[in-house]
Length: 352
Image (cartoon, rainbow, N blue to C red; front, side):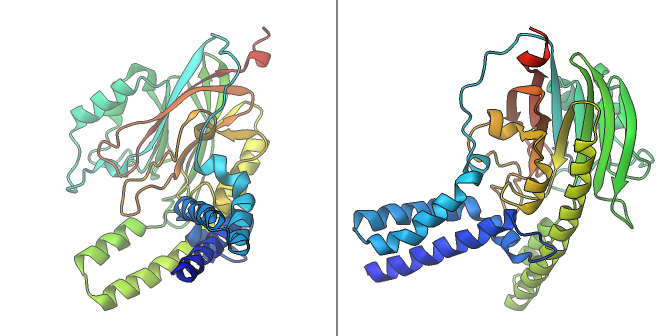
């Protein structure tokens, strides 16, 4: 029996090691590790449990591989399992509250439009100074929900490229640029300068290339035949390879936008990728830090769809800024949980 457990344990360790390659290997070169990276938190937990069991059994050779994998995973552990340490005392100065969330076109799970009054109440309750939204409707849609959002006085201005589905709201906005994937301009990012209580912030609102896994998973559930499931699963794999390559390209563009910004940067949105991905690690330049890693706790999963437990929505914050608080909010009508974050200036940048 122990040999079987050892075999399974080492196979799990090898699979986890394969997934860990995703953060280092560009998907343009080799994309399969990106698939395994989706399961990496669970794989690492199982690998650690097997390593402890092998040590308990005093099977030292069997413990070598899982222990090596855990050691190799150390740089990514705080990104996968956030547990913030003690930070310096808050300076007590002004703060800015931001919210980001994928709205799924303001359609509820039964595919009906959400009540505009409900949308209005939710955005007023957010109490946010700046809101970064993905998968919203274009202004010319018969029901765009723009008036509902702007009932919150501090969200009276909007930056949204015509015909696209990404919008940033605030009280004093200056559009900078926008970049979207062709031909449908469904995914991409917009850059906005926002005047706030802590000065001008360059806000980047991103919705990186979608995997479309939710729609395929729903199709598998509707047609449960073995052949259909196998074909759909194959399309999911090849599609994920294609979209991971596109996200890597978008990540490089965003990194350039971050590094050339004359103002402190706040990057938020739906990255459609996990913290162990190449995309995430390309975006996380020396100038940015992951707000959830700084002040969140645990996995911080934001996706509630067919593959729950994934953290694919983020706030990344300039190192000149302090993350005072971050939390996940109720998903409301979407299959994504919004994030609400409070930031301020670091003590060394306030002149105190």
